Image (cartoon, rainbow, N blue to C red; front, side):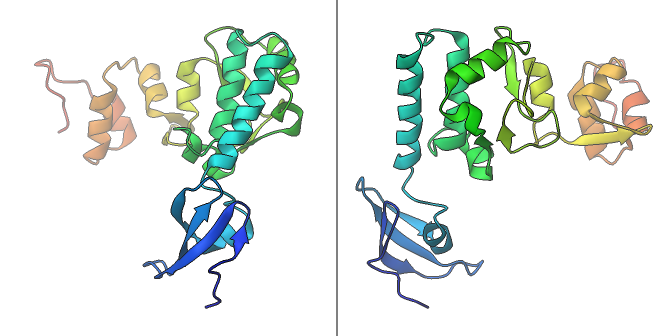
Length: 219
């Protein structure tokens, strides 16, 4: 194993080697330019995938947001919050949603990345209304926020498009459980989910009436 102690990559200087874990991935301890000491996967550090403790992404996000606030006088517009949230979840490692976005390689197109006005003009001309959410998955599970992959949708539709949703195929169509419950006019989604978890097929789970005593029929 090559000794990387003392070498610096990006903002990280490696200070110690750590034992391999169960997946045989080598880890190291490194100190960031900001003074933060953490453990990292060596391959992420040497490849440039990880360049700091997260302070670099926070700095970039902060600088972009400052540009957003100072350059156009639209800082109080609701779309400024939509834009800032998009940038943050893609580039700020401390953002609560980063693991599902930036952590999985989701990025913002060059046209929007440092140009709020471009994003603003696109949004105004493409159906934005206050209360709608930005959805990037109209063409499948996209890893890019761009004019070609995004649309404004209701919160309800956006939740259905998340990758955590499981689609159920029934009668040749694939829908989320919530969508199937709407088709069958079932308000108790947990009842249907409980039936499926008990081994029922989807047709039986959807079409069997609930017991009149209020208990969920899973037999």
